[in-house]
Image 1 (tube, rainbow over the protein chains, first blue to last red):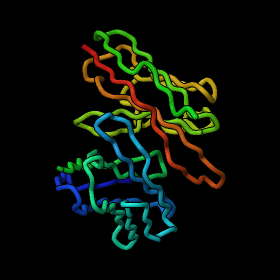
Image 2 (cartoon, each protein chain N blue to C red; image 1 turned 180 degrees about the vertical axis):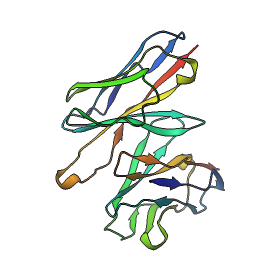
Image 3 (tube, chains in turn cyan, yellow; image 1 turned 120 degrees about the horizontal axis):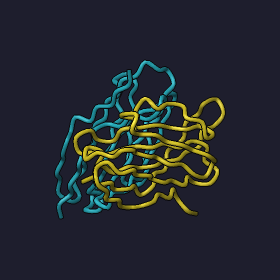
Image 4 (cartoon, each protein chain N blue to C red; image 1 turned 90 degrees about the horizontal axis):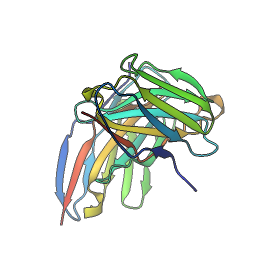
Length: 111
Length: 117
């Protein structure tokens, strides 16, 4: 069975704070892919990152960074120096066998 | 480059009517996915196609739902008859599926907001 858990339903921070969004997954597959998507208030789903199960290197892209740890089945997402434009719902997802999304974390960044 | 195109963007219909949602994937992509998003159930995968062939339709909620992909550039999701509980945002997404079953990121369309009264 595949499962993605995003335990944080909502997070509220003040601009310039760092924030980490948690993602824990379950799968029996040895090869799998993990993704993060952003859904801003406009409703579209925006791809942020893909990581395969053989690549545990952390990744940094500007203010965004991702920490993949197979030992704890986690793929956490950190936004450094958050901005109001980061306000959105963020989804973690797991593949193969279709794509299973977590319930999402609603991030609100206040000015 | 055009992204995934969905039509209509909004649909309001009465219970019992047939609804057809349309999707044009990104050119060159060989996998297509239909999702439904509701507050209660979040994002759910309904069905996906590889090279126009349905691979997994286990997410299709009932026989009232059907999906087709007659060619690489077009897919439909049909609900017949529609019910109020079908009200949701329906997303189409496409991706490349490489050799050795490599999975690449999915690119989503803007969604169709369906309201069944």
